[in-house]
Image (cartoon, rainbow, N blue to C red; front, side, top):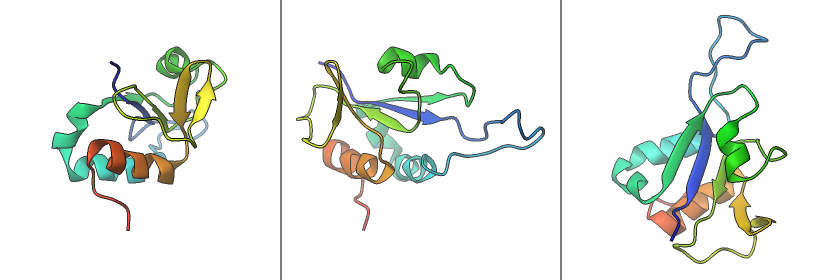
Length: 114
């Protein structure tokens, strides 16, 4: 059985277009907040925080070179796969932040978004 894999941009990343500045991903920030709300629940999924620069090797390994946008939740086989998940070969994944938050609640017991 495989766990869900959550790929996020590492917080505080640098963008060469803006020397000396650090950034967070606006789509990943709510997910990071949810993860921080109950760290004990993170053990049930694999979480990788990736650098901003492409190519993002972990994203390519998980999906492919055309799917390096983050955040992404690659669905494992420990839970039923929702009908609205995207498909790439035999892999199922979700890229919408709100849907990722919902699935973290449904599949891993995190608090739901109100």
